[in-house]
Length: 477
Length: 96
Image (cartoon, rainbow over all chains, first blue to last red; front, side, top):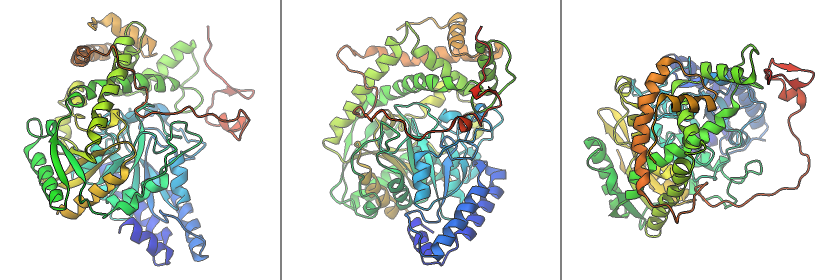
């Protein structure tokens, strides 16, 4: 059942929140043995929230956009008292003393927190296979030999798998909401940089991180976006602009919208079936009144990936400097000098990809290399943003597949070099580098596996993405 | 920029990042980093002399607030997540 109807039924007293919560927790516990979508299931918290809500509903005191809805959150988002590791062993046993702003706002709207979802360690991956030391890899609910996509893999996987009413909060730095949405066949919206507060998020790269909603339908995602968006005085990069009419944009129609079809992301390099399904969806949208034109995004096509990896690893290497076996998270016996102690704890508890990115990022901002790598990447980012801005003078949104292929098998991923792994972000990296909002929606399946279509809009134009996404849901069988 | 990526550079960077790499990691990372930086060197072909860096993807204004004490974690709470503490302070490894 979709969120809107569910909330209405809960308000009317036709659904017991406690019963629904028990059902979805049992489902999560049972399916986790096979699919590993959760790093932590917060049964105790969920049931106490559910009982509290039921009491209020009986007294007619309950309200909220997410009343009684089960919410899972990417492991990197803080939930007070629930183990929050960002998929890393170095944060073992860390139970935050506070809620992230998105957690707090969702709960205020009546959400029930059911757990923390599996991810690449600190978000470092495209397939959710780069999990931390001793952590489990989430599996695709459509085929457990295949990846969920990363890095918000557990969020995408469980959103697709569950039979209950549920939404999830993912986080995208370079494509980590759109990718798992595409591979798992759900809707995922990554908002404009600054639209949603990052307070209480374990930072990966501060100038790129965005928290955003994932769920079975565009309407569910729009409702969650409404609950979490907006200015936060605890987070100085949140934008003061008024919110769009997100849920009201569902089913609004798309007549007259102008869409640019990104030619670099079709044809060679893209799986034929993926190409065809996305083209078909575009044809269906044209029948609904969308105007299309082929456009080119040459600078983003060529440079967004290196720019992304240089900026993100440079920022990650500073953000991860605080994890050193002190104050919280994993600890060791206090021995040796501080350099020796920190080095020991970090070397033992960061996974391989975390080490690789820390090294790449430390290099990119080291004296002697900073201007040539980090600063140059920041300057080219300006060019990439301008390339988008010019197109958005003419177009409401741009369109392409989300990923050039369906969810790969684990044994295929094992063969990739780190560089090949990075290159798979070709279509999702550009909007992330430019802070542009984007949505991935299911456009059908190929060989039983979902294929995603990706729309990107100008800063703060999330409503247009919701209009387009819900139109795709209507026309794709 | 042409950079010679060798073991010496890798170890210098790792030391800066407070990471001790095993021989196996060195052997694996070295060619991978070479390949990555070689591929990223395509950024050198762009003239950036007149470009301003975008440290954020969207223009932000400085946010100011009054400098007054607000509610925050108590000392006891802040210390509650570690076993390494003494007399109300965090206890760390020795500096020298």
